[in-house]
Image 1 (tube, rainbow, N blue to C red):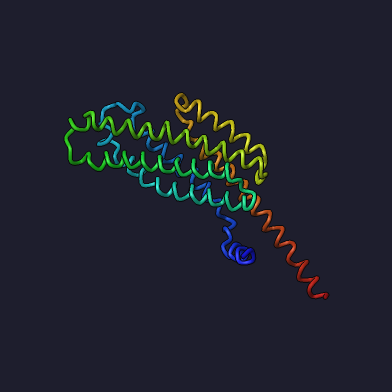
Image 2 (spheres, rainbow, N blue to C red):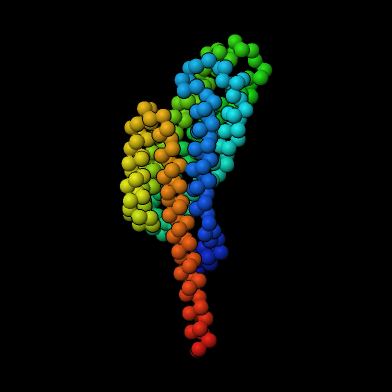
Length: 234
């Protein structure tokens, strides 16, 4: 059984460049939030004129959300692949659960905004300023800026704890994660651009993993001629 598991593991190896997904997630999420913040009013109870004026920009941001989600899932897979047998069940549960909740809330918020834009073309301006549309805008705002960001903070804390215990990255990356997570949990309501903490930290981990993978490939390439020569001499 153990031999079969090892053979399967050897066959299904994570690509060395898979950590690029974390960099893609960083770029996509910052682009999405930048487009939304530029096109939508900061106050969720503002009137709905932005729907007709900036619907194209908002639609562009919403169409990028699924790709950001796929990139984030791939990044989670890369981290779990590096953990291998070192993965702790408790922190792994919090790590994976908070990541999936963050993605679910990101998608839910995007779906609410997308539904508002989809129905805006068939209703009057009075309906756009109605309590129903204000409720939808407020719900999307709260899901993303309160609950999703808090889950992002939990994800960073659990991941940083795993990084320290397993030492798959330098400790200073984990300490940065703790500091940024505290900023998300406590200051997200006051810091307008606090959402960049998660994608920037994910990019930091991804860049380190890419560099570490590149070094391991260089070591394998350097060791291969030595093994060939020793085999020929024998």
